[in-house]
Length: 380
Image 1: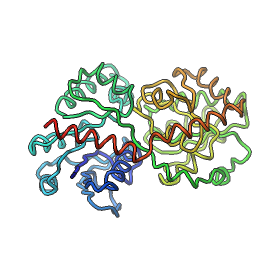
Image 2: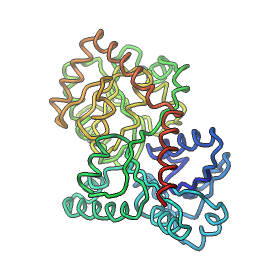
Image 3: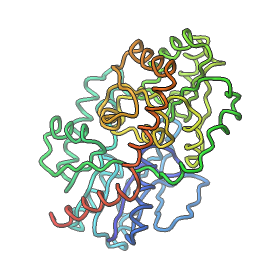
Image 4: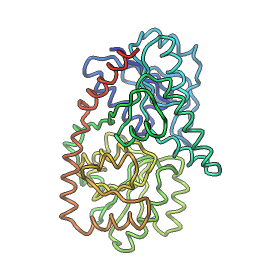
């Protein structure tokens, strides 16, 4: 099968979408399928993998973590037609997603779309003065987009139900979680990161992800201030970068927490297992993630999770591996303190998390995605 994936973002950018695309591509190619990527060009980055086609883009990574491909169909058309794809897989409903629709319809081949983000919630974070209107517009854009697709992929059952309930989708919607490369977690070094940041004697909370407004990091900092008042031996490690880093650093400074909260910036994805293994708890306050792939990555290191109730975390933690709480700082604080104070329960929950993470192996997710592709091809 020849598959073409369109994405607004890819390496060297780091995000859940990038990880999902890269690992699905790895799994599909390991089973002898061709996976061609149509993605943005990033200055000074050279690909070492085959079948990756880069096109001129505006680099907006300092604001929204993407390079915006200039959507010139004539520029991209020779590449897509030359591949002669059997199926097109879109990762976004705008920009590159629009081109994916155009080529799928012109070539009369199926279009699969993965619903990676709560676009309505995302829009509210970036247009706060018109949050309600921004949410409605985003919802309508996504609704119209999905009507043009052959098959929709949801990362979790809760997101599938949301799509069916709120978007009135009449196309098939299948649950296919993004995978985790579990092989990388077998030789993790749980002490390296603690030594590097001088954290050997501390209880460590960990967040990994974009430092962006929609990730709920204001709530996390507010909650951490209350945690440290009860347990001063606790530290918070924030792994990642993004447009909200400077404002968040100012908030941290105002709380007098600059020596207690460590911003690492972006780290290579292959080092994430070591960071995850270093933590006592993984903490997550985003309500916009459809799965929260970083939750599974933490669980794969045997680290329990405390997360706010949202469609992604609700499904990832449905059978255990962490605690779900309302998006309120007092509830979040109580959950964190409960696990920090009870080492036996924390270790049991970590073992449970490790067991549950096995469901996200690349081979398992790849087989589910292939089933979607095959159904979509039969539908056209």
